[in-house]
Amino acid sequence: MSEDLYSMKEAMIYSQRIAHLSKALWKAVEKDWQAWIKPYDLNINEHHVLSIASNLKGASISDIAKFGVMHVSTAFNFSKNLEERGLLSFSKRNDDKRNTYVEITEKGHLLLKDLNDSYEKSNHTVVEGSLPLKEMYGKFPQFLELLAVIRNIYGDDFMDIFEESFRNMEKQL
Amino acid sequence: MSEDLYSMKEAMIYSQRIAHLSKALWKAVEKDWQAWIKPYDLNINEHHVLSIASNLKGASISDIAKFGVMHVSTAFNFSKNLEERGLLSFSKRNDDKRNTYVEITEKGHLLLKDLNDSYEKSNHTVVEGSLPLKEMYGKFPQFLELLAVIRNIYGDDFMDIFEESFRNMEKQL
Image 1 (cartoon, each protein chain N blue to C red):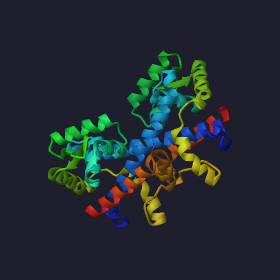
Image 2: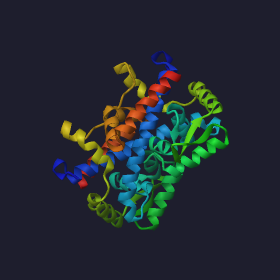
Image 3: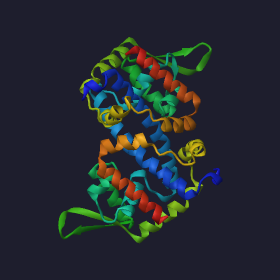
Image 4: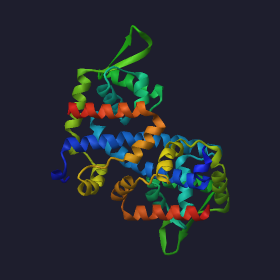
């Protein structure tokens, strides 16, 4: 580490601050997310895989793992569950026999559409907690520092795909 | 929800953005945290309970649950493990027979000190990913928008204790 830039004490306090904040945020996000998708018999990773497959046309299992922040084996197992339910289809490519590619099926699209339509009726703890900022600034918070930290950890490629998925989601809705 | 302030589409995209960002941040935090405490045979919740007990003098199990963002039963079970290892001691108060209070023992303090001394040798993905911001602004990011959202979700009390624990940690280090 570039120790000239900071003391160990400073780094340790900062890393515990962000750890505790991140845990608190994730627990609230997780609760909202689980409550939303529960009626559709999906878990968070399965919904995440399905969204990535819908937003990235022709994703490989390693893309799913990378952009879903999960192990390749986790990405594969959850994709397999979704394939068995007819929500994803698997394929191999002639020019790349080693990787498995997944594509969302019509049934998968319909399920995502249903889920989106039911969003309104669900819990929105995190959205509600962000409303005072929206009132003050006229828009939802952008978390630019957080985006920068995540870009540094996961790379430009990760963030580019992240932004592209959200542009696609916006168009599809 | 106050629907005049935002459209459902806007809320849904925002909540998925923050969900995916929060997941990515938490996975990086979790990895660093686990790697740091692993040699001490602690899991994240046990370390969190121990830190809270050290920073809040005389915390009840419900305080631990609240400030550690875990279920009361989880807080109790992990506290029990720590008590069996002699790192925490349990007590009842005469004026409050219903709650169990926990206090960190001398052995618990020594373990936390050891852990802090070993921080340098551990992984620091999140700290490293925050360094470009530190170089640019002269300090580590403060995540003020995130703090505001978490304050709205968990309440002023939660944030006051959060800030107090970090002031205590700073003094103790």
